[in-house]
Image (cartoon, rainbow, N blue to C red):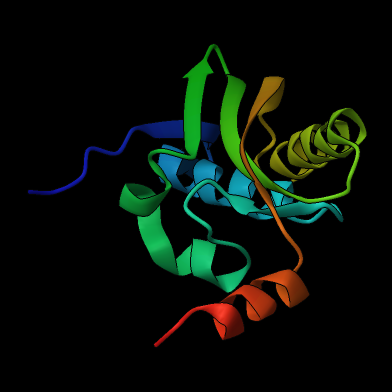
Length: 136
């Protein structure tokens, strides 16, 4: 079954034509921007960087929700934090980054970026030690 995508007109000109964008594109832009600040490990599904762009909306559905009304975007994100970072400061940086990038790339106004933290991820060194201790 095909995924339902919402398509929005972000630019319309009588002589040049229109530019449309799907909510999936806005979700991918948002997820990529949200994982840029130091201290954000990934989106809820554990995806970051190139993995986000390859995953598609189905994989992002639990982590990113995009609502557009009257050319204003509201974005809801579920993120994983790295252990040891200040959650309010780090999530504020993620919110600001998402707002800036979505507005610059799409021309839409971002009304809000709402962030929920799903997990705190321990440093990679700790994970490797745990794997070594586990029996095969």
